[in-house]
Length: 193
Image 1 (cartoon, one colour):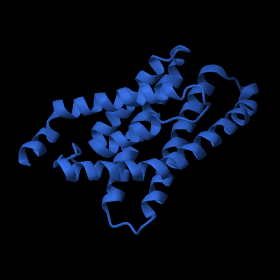
Image 2: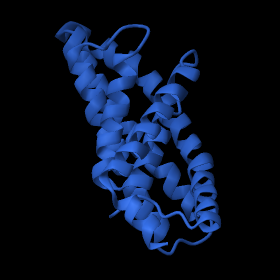
Image 3: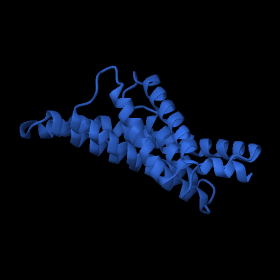
């Protein structure tokens, strides 16, 4: 058991876990690319934060969204949007780590669903604000500000609602499956904080 715990604290092991999470996030992102604003990248990177902790969660979130954007078949985003995506990804990883702290505290039944939905809503809202600001800086002007914001609002609302629902359903399920596997195998999560 101690050997497994030491492996989980190893930076090389954490980097390996992070690489797998990033690859899964990018793959799931492209799997749903045809469906506007319904995605599993955010959930995957937040769960990476849950597993790896705050620091590594931020790194994995930033690299995950950066790689997802850089490899886009539509081309890489303009620099202000690309930077916003990376910052938003880092905050998503941190959000997953914070959600772990909530899940590990004493929650009443059903509260984990509410906490997961609220986290999905908050991290997606922040991500959408950052990327919409980045888009505005990259391609808009003072005369197009209002139409730009109104047009982006509808996409953001769908994105926020869908991610809240995805987090509410899948995040508690993922944590239960992970805890079950951990109990069965004696595996210790790599999160240090």
